[in-house]
Length: 365
Image (cartoon, rainbow, N blue to C red; front, side):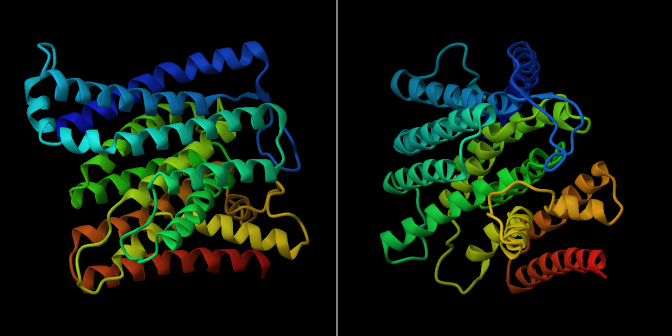
């Protein structure tokens, strides 16, 4: 199975490295550009949109090809060109892959809808309530298709409601986080890597197989998006990243039996702590100032770090390091078994977030 995951990652990485410059040239040609806005944005020259297209295609195409190959093998056996060692590792999972096809199809369709909406928004600026309505519709459709939290809840309705709120919340959190070169993509890469490690540690290979291509897609896009960015992923990309990661976290099986553990509740909150913190704090600031939570401004965590004296690059790097430190705590939940490992992971997360709060208070003192 490791071979299959590595192939998925490499295929996505290569496709992303190929698609990104192609999309960039096309965006420049048709004038699909993000122009500077001193009130909300940090870039100083028009920059092409469209990176979200490259991320989406580099994630979905290899995954769809892998599923098609699995379905073919299940129906007709191993083709002569198909590596024998990969087939042997995957063959035992073929019935499970077939059973999950409807769910996977629903997830991909939902992602496609959000990417298309994001492209329209990047071009024409849709209102926040239109975007929210589409996100809610996609999340509700997924819940009806069975993509919902079930492990700890007796009520399907409650599980569906919580799943919808989680998917919409995390999707918007990554959209909010896309406010400096390389920030949202870098955080998504770190979160996906930590999530992949937790999936492998808990032997959840289907989740790992859906994360590997996302990791490769973002890895191929990041060199083009780091400051000074040569292409932006736009809402199409940030919405897709948040959506894909949030949906996989809903599908992740956290329950491990009747033993008492806060791990099922802690892991998603720990791994997504930085996007959640940014979204919550910037929303509180906007509401206190009497503005819409969806109004663009320079009050995000990255901007507040710049107020401390960091450059844009250092602010992005600091948030990446913060995400990495907290993500390690999430992985520790699965690598260090028992109450001790859980306590250390929780303390580590709270300590890092407390450090951010202290630094932010320094701005106002």
